[in-house]
Length: 224
Picture 1 (spheres, rainbow, N blue to C red):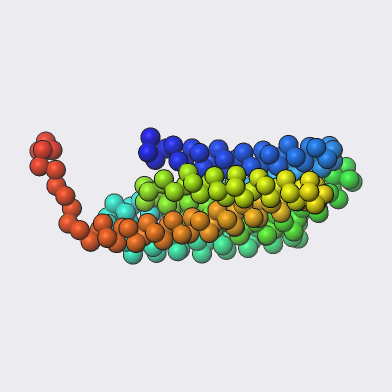
Picture 2 (cartoon, helix red, strand yellow):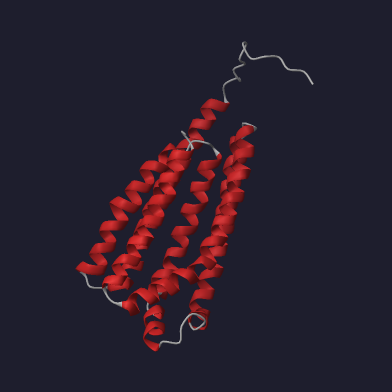
């Protein structure tokens, strides 16, 4: 419960922001909504790669945490971050040079294609925030200290993302372009907060791992 509940909230709130983006895009018409959905589907080319590396990072960090190796935890997270930033750069290059070719696979409507292409700049920009927050959130999961994810997700996606989304899309009349720019703000906020939480966890591990292991004298002695 202590580990699953914060992770469940984090995933649910993050998905909720993108769902809100679809709802708000729909307020401006079917072309805006269709373009939003098409670009969202294309964006999975980056997201699924970052998530795959993130899961691998979580496993590596968990192994080092179990071995009480703080430097190993730090190195695993750092290496994973470098790999995901590289993947974010490659994904961004694909989005910059091949987005039109990808969009026409989903629709031949000229209005939808033109609107989808207007989302490319915010899509490219948020790749790096997405890569960083996925990497560090999964590294944090590997340490088993996941309680901060509950508050981080609420602050980043509800406190920052949702108001920014409504403000840019409706207040500044940027429509679905504003929706996509709001994702940048939410992901950057999340990345910064997870970075802080992960570094705090590293310092906590240094203190805990510096102490001798406590042996439970009441535990049964099982021999194989």
